[in-house]
Image (tube, rainbow, N blue to C red; front, side):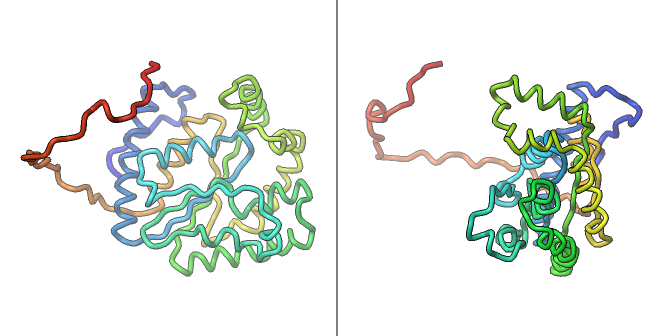
Length: 269
């Protein structure tokens, strides 16, 4: 995985410079992984679950930031439609699974049923228990089909979650991140804890285990997750040789339209 600098696990502080340096090196490795996925025709699914405000979205953003969106894409499904509610539960997720040479990052996934749907009574007890029974088989089927399935649970303490919620409330740029469902989850902390523990009991399987990310420190959580993801998919460096740009060919006899005929964006800044 290259010469990625290891951070001191005992250090509580991570400087901005150190964070950016390590992140940049990890993102270089992600680009190498991307090329390997394309070259080998791998099919990769990475699931991100966890508490609200645990930092899932920020980690996903750093993973995808430097990658080709045609190779690495994010799936973040909204509330199911009335039609989707009548379908087989996993049906709405299946079309988003990767083809050969693709990596899909699920910003929340089919585990909604084991979490928010269970706690908020959006599903029946029968539907919930059927999910717990069928989910491990569904994931084993994905793995048997050749999909590399990696599941992350972002764990955040109640104190840190409270601070992040308060920060979102007072920041107009982040306020959109707080939905009524997020606020309700804050009130039902214990119920969500029980749901998570029960979910792990049934779905932490050998073929697709859960990996818990300690996320009280967002920066460390991002670096640790990316480092772990790189370690789970063996890859080789397929970086091309340095590219030399060919000289431009000068056209002869062509006169371009007047510059003033184009409509430009006003220069406000």
